[in-house]
Amino acid sequence: MKKLIIFDLDGTLLNTIADLASATNHALAANGYPQHATEEYRFFVGNGINKLFERALPDGEKTETNVLRIRQSFIPYYDVHCADLTRPYPGIPELLNTLQQKGIQIAVASNKYQRATGKLIPHFFPDIRFTAILGQREGIPRKPDPQIVHEIIKLAGVQPEDVLYVGDSNVDMQTALHAKVDGIGVTWGFRPRTELEEGHPFAIIDKASDLLAYI
Image (cartoon, rainbow, N blue to C red; front, side):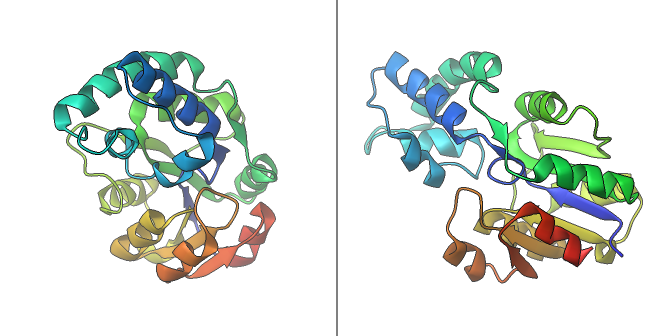
């Protein structure tokens, strides 16, 4: 039986795409750049917000200076509006409650910046005791680097073979491989099933309750 389940956040636990799109479009418009349809953001996210801004900027404007300008406009707006349209995916609250009742540790490893990660998880899952809620922090490499997973495993006091890592993108599947833990791909998130398959996960699931078969 697994002892620790580590979840990605965006596209796995929470459908955050509308709020991410709204905040990025706000920042783009504030700096005189064209905006994008919400659906386009499904392929912009996943590697941290600086990479999101780089992808959203027009060709020829993808400089570090411009990325930082967009970031300065994005963060104050997103900090206020990050939960406006964001919601848990179907079955996720029930899944987390079931895992908690079984005595399995639960954690979050996200490329979303730490302040937003630390705000959203307790807002939507106030009754869940998380072993760790970790987002992108200064000096810590982003996923698919496995450092964040190793940090959580150490905090939980378990071994890699006791862990499932759950996510919706190839970044997540690579993270699991690099961390030498079993990776579970979820099809309800931002990326297509074919992308998950390319990452050679331990399993792919179509609804939240399916995870229980792998613990």
